[in-house]
Length: 145
Image (tube, rainbow, N blue to C red; front, side):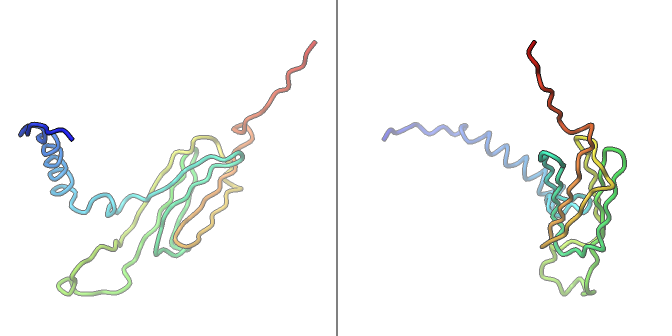
């Protein structure tokens, strides 16, 4: 075990970063990213024949979600409605969000929108978008002469 000399300036960068984080997130975005009404968390991945998009939409009904594909962009939107009206002064904490949301995602390859499938299970929307034939990789056999 070694004893090191105390340096009062050693912790200043981390203190500065903490103050920046406090002013950036604490004052101007008090609720953080989780309460951004306009966005929707998505995962987009590619498997051999299709593009798969998974979106977390807890508390939604499948009929309240709209999906549209225009060109190389897919848009998922909807609205979370408030279930009951409770007076503001009766709340101790209110973190559940209500209102409309929308998320547009640029597709990395061309897809066949007429063959797209959407499955909604346990608050997760899974979209499977088959790739267009021109977007699928093709192999070329090499012949020897």
